[in-house]
Length: 492
Picture (cartoon, one colour):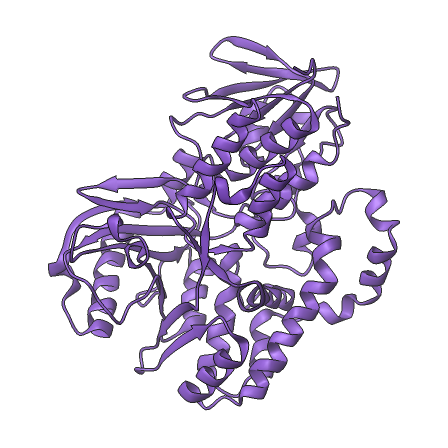
């Protein structure tokens, strides 16, 4: 057993990954989680015979999960299995247009051409550009620290810097997409990818057009046991490596002496360590755990615009709909208005785009026989004191009306159970400031460079991982944040 100790604050997906990497490196690792369960946003809900993945519902780039098992000399298939989706998502437009987003690029391009008349060559060219952005940015900006001199001394970094004009950082995502495509429905289709990191396609840089590459090149997947099986399998791996998890253990303070992190305080107990890693939202890390050290707070970062949040209805439905798939999108008729409401009005548009996930399509026991478990989500603003009860009531009515119209049946009569998660609940359950899902937004050209570092420059021995720090939110980036973080502490 190593005499060097690492403490992880938060058992979210990045915190678990950080624990695995540090354990493999030789540290004795303890993880402290305020909740009674691991996973953070990547948790689950069970109600009246229905099971729901509570948060993230789309799996891309599972290689970053497999990598953790391989790092520990374990066979990933002994812990975690998944299947590739032939159709990533079904799309429904108000004018009756329906699109099956096939994983195969040629088939997908032909499908868009069939449904909208958009030339298939435009789709192929666009996805090639998305691939180009990925190849320029991935190894430099996603897999390494942007705050380390060593990153910029590497030759592949220099090559990428010379190619920076090709990542299209100085146009808005929507502006770029409108220039690529002839059909407004296709523009809306690709604008939606801004929501993958809680941003606004009318403001976020066109660099985010890298995201379609992740789906249409690497593919989308479904884990055998549902999304929560990711959490369970990684916790099992961590425990097999000797990591200790302490639940119902809310951390009160990061103990700092002479600008050196010495450990943490939990329920009056001081736990000493050589390094401390916070997987908590960066805002709460400083405001709650480092409140005795205001001079060390990164005020500019803490005041950055937050990402959007989500309003989720978990509905038990007493019917099955063959026309629906695992992932489904019902588009708004006025996309620009929807984002203006979220970002300018801090409100919910009357006709929001609805995301509907039904895991029982592939995991039948997630719902009773003849039924479906509907995870119904819309993008909403972060919590700034709105009257959420009133907003939820109105949104529920509008969503039911929208889905009923598209499916030709009164959805409200089919709902037999309901749970709700809104920005207030996201904040309280996952310590995400204002309920923002992805930390800060990416609504500026230089957002990628402005995220908090993975290692403190002011407090020795303090490190960070998770969606509120570099490189960003979502499962793949959270896993990469742990990878970047774990590269810094020296081996014991």
